[in-house]
Image (cartoon, rainbow, N blue to C red):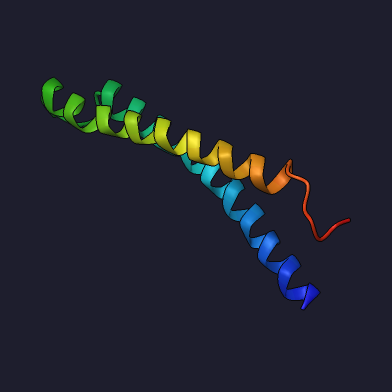
Length: 80
């Protein structure tokens, strides 16, 4: 039973770190779409794509922060 609990917590920690990496990916993709000259896309259309990505990245940053705080910095009842 203890092994199942610890592996579940390990998955939570891995997914929290992965979520943080994805935050940087979303910010980078939004910045790339907004500033790139590789594609011949109208500036207004690039803004339409980039702004929701920025907003989603900010949302994911807050949720990732909460998950990291919960998984890495909270005191577990099982450890006592």
